[in-house]
Amino acid sequence: MARIELWNGDICDLEVDAIVSPASTSLWMSTGIAGEIKRIGGDEIEFAAIRQAPVALGDAVVTTAGRLAAKVVIHAVSLERDRRTNAAALDRAARYAMARVRELGLTSVAFPALGTGVGGFPLGEAARIAVDAVRDELQEPSSIEHVIFALRGAAPYEAFARALSAGEPAPSRPVLAPAAWRPVGPGEEAVAAPVRRGAGEEPTGEPRA
Image (cartoon, rainbow, N blue to C red; front, top):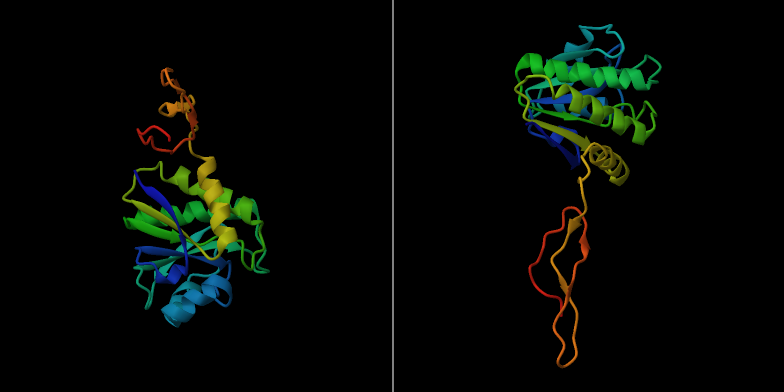
């Protein structure tokens, strides 16, 4: 089963097979994360992209990765020419990007927070859309083993962490911790009182002092 992880840092630093770049229908890489990818990876990335323009909103095209550690850049067309976006475009762009990864037989891909920079889309909703789309696409047979959401700053990281945790199954019943011990007086027997333990906490197996 493929794993989904969050990473707080520059997407250009990641050694993955594919990096997803936010793109408008014209595929120019002038600002935001796309501009950063061009600056670090080289102008040939943009040249290869615009030769495939114009592209429909929600589609995705593949180019060289230039000087980046990645093998390819996938330009997810999530922005109109005026750099606005909407929920349907973000969902479709994420799905088409995943489809390109499958078609190329790649094993790892990194996504930014599509639509939340120059697109101005609400961060929480964008995170939910992206996580749901990626999870859904991972149900398709593929070679994909690892998906990373590369995020810059606490707010995007927390938004995507909430979106990821929202899709996790809740425990079917409360989990009980080992007995918690209380001090007793002379001649009394030590009596254990069960206490509830939150999901993910590990039992210590030791009595409390």
